[in-house]
Image (tube, rainbow, N blue to C red; front, side, top):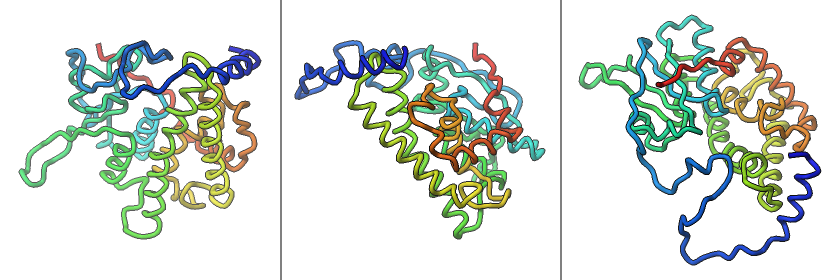
Length: 288
């Protein structure tokens, strides 16, 4: 869709006041949009599907979306450090085909979202036996892996750890407004709608300004030394770094991303890291 046609459609849609709010919501019609075929108000497995398990200690089931590449990048950063215990097999979960609703995947992540990870090297200290650990939610996976291997997160209580965790949780709370809000209504909704696009554009630009002001005086999210690069940078870069580099939603011009020079500088610096390059383009094995 061209920019002009989008502007025209937004104007005409803004005048549409035909929707009447019902007393009780019912799922009585197709909701439209790119992921309409997989949307449902209910949770749980929809079909039986066995996931492959490789020989590496870590098994990743994911897709190279912004949420997915976060974990890819951290695993590749650990590989860059030569940590053999962080070896992993990576498998593709095709969310457009509904792989996230397969029985084995739901057993790992009952929320049916990528990424999900199983650590087969974990040991249950209480019972002194191997006990695979299942993880879902990208923030939880990043924190688990960083703490497990003692890399890319401050381990000692204090200012540095508090700042890292604060920015980590900032992304967890903020990115849904970018992805599920702005990204959905700008790129995936069945038609442009002025109110939600304006609402989520405003919030996305506010978040970019938060980052821009912070990064004016910080090389990384948590400091100015190379050792300060950590999971806060990784988790935020996957969404906001790629956004200002023009990698998400074809929305760089619309959002005027060049007006956030400090985010641009930070995003470009991180994009040059070998592990980041590998993580973004990670080859995922098919599950079938």
